[in-house]
Image 1: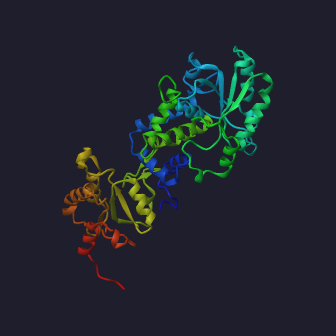
Image 2: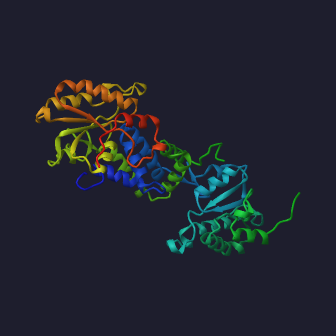
Image 3: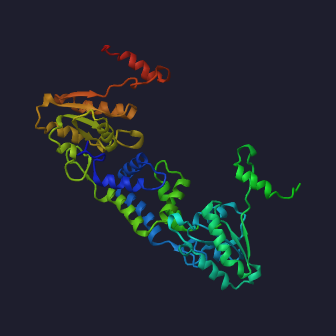
Length: 209
Length: 209
């Protein structure tokens, strides 16, 4: 061994540790990836890191919805065919991408950039709730035509955040809705968790043949 | 969608493509990792890329064995307790790490930096075979005491490279050996491939109770 170390080089070790700090990348994968990079021409490595550095240095966020963008207005907010009166409130950039991938939504977004989580020390002022309230207050749309869809996750943090936002905006005269919850389409009753099944029963809907 | 693109930002797309170019990282994992990095403070991203850039810019290779090192002599070659008369010839840095991890080897190494592979356009002059010959020719050790262990993979490229190296050094008076091949320790006969099983029979060894 190399002076009781696992790695023959401090530089290799630090690269493995950096790569291994990514979520879902174990130490063996990190070593494999580091050795792969080590075998590449320096130019390729520099291109790789430059592409990642641009995430830190050059990414824009939409001034309207805080979605990641290449300029100060994202492609969705800039799209005049989208319904600016329907605002879907989500936790993250990824959620916007998930909803866009469904192809079912023609409104706009508001990216909170996080979720209220006392355990992680994230309070209401750490995410963009005030910006949502300001956005509603200063809208050019007729206030009664505005619908806010709270599309947050169904866990405690998501429910807490939805409730908090609801309390902030309930007096403004906008319509507030949330995602339908129930059994997934195609789900088997046998494998459904009992909470979801129970709530799906309580929230049963008219059968449409 | 974003102007018929899958990604809301060109910068995000390029980062995903860079990460997805790593071996074994699919496009979904690449997106997940890129969004994770996007959520990090710029300083963390810069530390991450700096650690990887050092693989391109600051890594040393041992002047003796071409192993990755933090200076011009690697820790193994610098270690006076190791047997400099036994030289294990391997394809890559990773192979050195694998052999070191066994704790069974007290000699030194020679890292070829590749393997002869006509399909990939890699010939004998593209890997460090000449350097091995020169190293043997200029050694301070008594030539008849030197053992060269050809520790290359058992595929066609490995066999070809072993044979080529053997032809280059057979006249120099050194002992040449190769790794034992046979059933793995603990292997079940039932699941062994027939080539390995057949060769293990032909190369049978005295039973040592």
